[in-house]
Image (cartoon, rainbow over the protein chains, first blue to last red):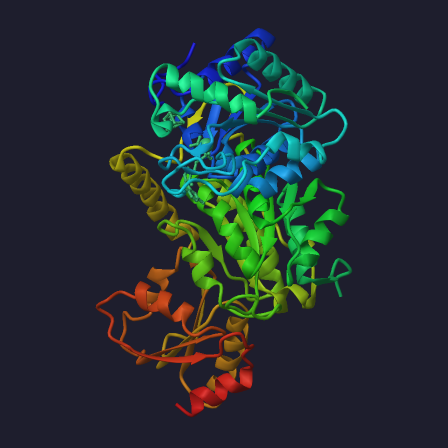
Length: 223
Length: 343
Ligand SMILES: Cc1ncc(C[n+]2csc(CCOP(=O)(O)OP(=O)(O)O)c2C)c(N)n1
Ligand code: SF4
Ligand SMILES: [Mg+2]
């Protein structure tokens, strides 16, 4: 159960990922070792959400922070929760190098195709021709595929996957695999396609339709 | 001759000080004049990582100290700028983050060995109030001692700390007997404990919440400032002019004051050893009598130390100021003497 009430917008995908994470930790009996580092983005709203050690970092900096933590406390289970902007734009350099060095940390990337926290601006994951406050004529770029990019960089034993908040079984399975990957000393990244009704300006089934549409562009599954 | 005396480079003394402080890990990215600190630390076989940039080094240090490990980094110039990102998180969360800064000439890539131009960056380079400890060593021995002290004060008082030195001191070799120096270590502790759950924000919804945090930190800072703030003060009882300098320029000024005294000039010497907190009381107290007529601030920058001195000196103290400023250049004893004699 969450420790405190969610501060996420109604219908946001983040709490689904977080509750699933918590459930997985509970199931594996490792809540006590878990340390959740939050990037600045809507992930920051989770600072007191789960009954596990949690702290906020800076935008794009949660990966090197959790690397420093994990190297200092080897028996901890280090989880970095980060948005697509934090992971694939400002923090990409650190993400690539953490993956390349096979840092035994678990990165959960919330792909909502926008900069949620700052009002829905263009993110590396924004679809081609998607309209955002910083792409008023539609995004001229193609979206960025994080797990696919890392595939050519990671070492044997790393775990890379993409799922969605409305795929609870797969989400839980991947979170569990990512945790097990860390336990045997490897890097993992799970990208989660996630609802952002506030910035998508969608209601009800529109939000679900939009998310399901994203699955045609961002392929779900293990890499 | 004591056979414990060794000839060591400044960077070797830094590495030795970090080892003796029981630092467990260094994260760093090569930049002159601090490359030898990184390679020297790696050569000890202690845990280390050459990161992809200084930003990652800074945040890795933050992560390590959150887990309770004594960690540090070293850099200068453009790398020091990038480290201010992690330093800002450390200032906000009161993390015992330690950086050894080897100042080099700026702005931009500037020159690579020497300046005193990173004073403002070290003291006030964050998006906050500058609640970080900044030490400025003048000698090799002090470089060692203040590095030890930086770890101790950071872990005891929970403020980030910078040892602000330069490439001249780091590349200088001098005889030193470390066995003579007795400093007890303040142990590290887990900031995110294993046996308790913490929920730790650094961004606040309410402006009042942040304001409260800043006020609490400021209160602690004001309490610890008197015991930490330190200066070296000489020949001030009857001095008419007070020479103020820090770091290795301070060492040159000290020698200049000796020689000026020999030629009958009533010069006094004030060297802040800590730039943050600044030894304000020590400076103000020199003006209890009214022998001092003039302050001369001498530095290898266009006035970064002078700004701090003017700001810290009690406003009711009326005294003239003069400046000897050579941004990015070393300052010799003779030119200090000439400057004083011709002014
Ligand atoms: C260095 C820095 N630049 C910019 C910001 C402002 N900022 C906060 S969150 C954010 C974007 C968040 O987007 P994303 O990482 O995708 O996370 P989301 O909110 O969508 O989950 C930005 C640009 C910041 N906090 N720090
Ligand atoms: S802005 Fe979007 S991602 Fe952020 S809390 Fe609201 S719905 Fe969730
Ligand atoms: Mg996003």
